[in-house]
Image (cartoon, rainbow, N blue to C red; front, side, top):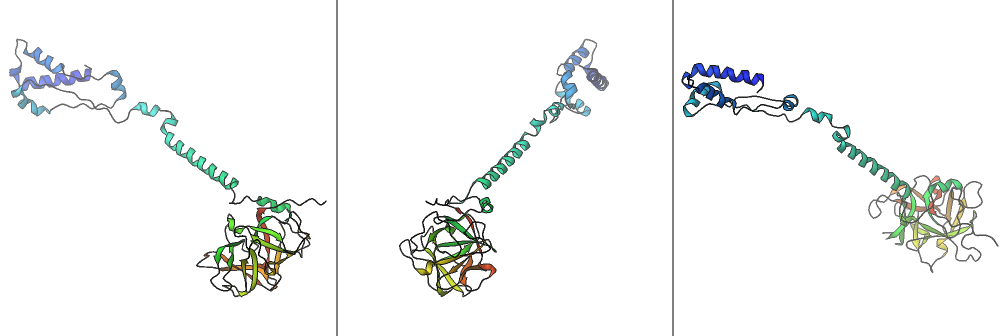
Length: 321
């Protein structure tokens, strides 16, 4: 029993003695009562006294002693309560206090790194040459698989197995906004009557070529039917591997001083039968091909006639014998 408890106990003994003198007699009842009071006392250890928040309270107020004397001997009970936290919690290492936040940050950094990696490494559905190759002036040869990008709007020449609802009713041709679409690949072919051209040959300005849609195997085609939105010359896809005519012939016109077709050169494609240039603009479809823009033919040279070879698989130039 520490000094404070002892002082507290004796004060109540003296007070209780004067109130109830019948509990004390000269034959030893006084010492017996003291023994009863001191026996149940809970004394905190030195460690608990230093590191715990202690609160002491009596089991009953002083006024209850009078009523308690009738039922039996009175006891004073000390209770201690330990606070929800102790000083030892403050001595934990920093990483133990913040491990969950550190884990979340590590996961966020990992996912961000993975997203950057996928963005830089993954390509479209069809393996294509890197975009940086455009600055190297890669030559375009027969047999190459390319995407044609409209210079002003950056849309790709596109087709799919959906017919026009008007005009010829042939397979529609549009401008597609996304880069990673397999329906925007075209195979560069010579004309059917060209016996000297072979795969890997370079293509000079003024040469007649055909563009075959890689997925549907139909040819880029034009005729005098009116286009659905602007009413210009309709551009469609028609024929098959064994079916082609002069409506599939386009004359390559290289802008500038270039003599052979390279990836970094601005070009125009002029249709042989109608004289219309391959053309596109900001007018877009709203229903069947929502978000895609119209591709048509116009007979005048305009800024919207210009195209560039973009993504694709460029076959190397064939060695001359």
